[in-house]
Amino acid sequence: MAHQKSSAEPEEGPLIKMKDLLTTIGVSKATILYYLKEGLIPKPVRTKSNMAYYRSACIERVRFIKDLQSQYRLPLAAIRKVLEERDQGRDVLSLIEMGKVVFGAKATNQVNQKVFCRMTGLTPKQVEECLSSDLLLPFENGMFDQEDIAIGQFLKGGFGVGLSIKDLDYYPRLAKETAKREMAIRMRLTKDLGFERNVSATMELTRAARSLRNYIFERHFQRSAASQAPSQKVCKKK
Image 1: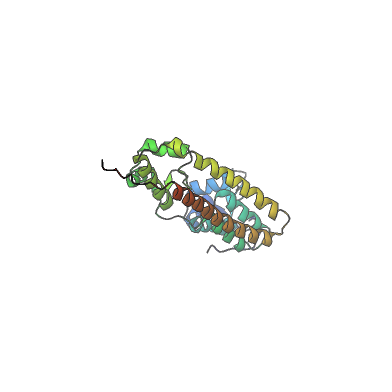
Image 2: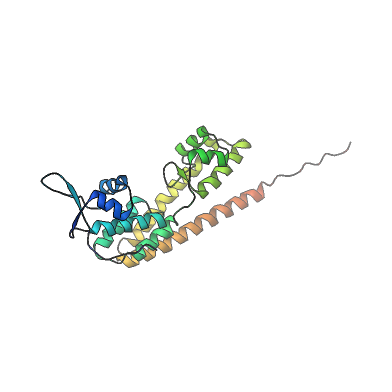
């Protein structure tokens, strides 16, 4: 699990150059600039000669962010929230655990779109249409995990028996409406709770919502399927 440290945003400590920061942490310059752009690390100190220096405390902060990204499937907004709470001196282990419950563990063995097409049998055009229709929802833009691949294979099979994207567009509509209502319920039930109780309630509500979705949708499908089971016609002899 990503280590956590109760400390304020790094504003003190020795100053180091970008190249020394990169060498110490082992990340690319693009990564540091991206973190800066997103406000995850403080801006460097500019000298009179316009040289940029970073606080040495940024080393630990960047490592912490990398831990969150490598071990958990946390979106940027969730990472920012963890950092904000951490900067206030709060224990963020429970917040990280909540992120794991909500977003799942970090996906491994991700593949790009070219490999995804080869593994699923979908054409690049079909993939783009599924992406634009929200039938495919990769967590990371341009990269597909094992869940995406499994759904892609099911979609390929469905298209093979005559399904169209239009036939399936009610799934994203229902999902968005369901998620909207779930978020409203969560907000109503947790808005007056303290930090720890809010985190605990959110995890419990997430587990309940996930189970209810699977249970209710599957049971309604089974009931409908039972009433429409295909029958074999028997030809009467003349």
